[in-house]
Image 1 (cartoon, rainbow, N blue to C red):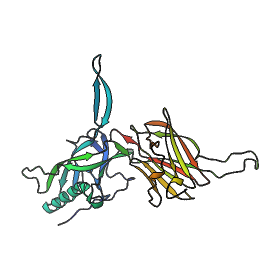
Image 2: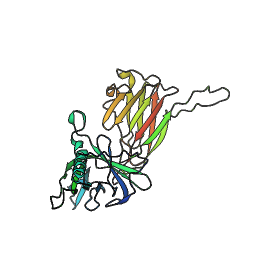
Image 3: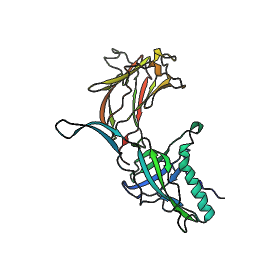
Image 4: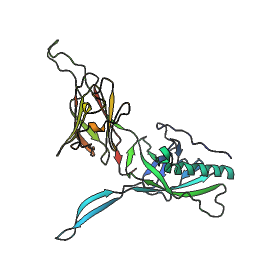
Length: 324
């Protein structure tokens, strides 16, 4: 029985010309399964593609509002909780003959259902639904197969063509930009203040930095620190200010030497050295707040104790959005 293999397409080459998709307009859409195989979903000349009629769940996230009765009438909003998202995804599958159709149907079904078992020790691992606009910008969302890979069960279907209405479940309802935002600050080479004339060496590690989150919701950045450094403090200035401090001397690793790195993830919280050591105990608990970046501009202060030439801080995050 012949088997199909999906073509590998680089992000710089949109898989197909954009088509009109309900709720989002013109876009090229690709499904990436847990193995990294890319499945173009809007190529109308292919043997599988999404059917525009019936697509839903690509718009703004849903929220649950908790309110309390107000003594003077009405209610007052107390809490807002974003909900998970379900995307309804009708797919048409074809084949030149029955065997080709069956191979396509089985292989594409596995590309979706393997999200439930293809992780370490059979744990669920999401696929990605990727939406690229005509200008090359794009967003994606992590998806798990929920249900719906069933044929129509009507006369003439299941021979050389059939369609399934798939439901994809998203634990995080927000869309993520394909391109990361990065901020790099590095300690400059020191110079003598008086030679040959009064001067100050360039230092971007110690000081204030303005960071812009262009997305629509808060993001949780990742920090990579390159030594030398003995302690690191990151502060988001505001009312109130929030901060966390990583004291390398309180870890089993000790101070970072030149070229050594440590990575701090704010969601999920983790601190790992470049060799994989768990250094989370070096954070100043319980005062530490692994803070997020709200939409818009934030003032951030980097402070590296023991910084020398080559010490650096790299901040990375992917903007998040309500819609595709």
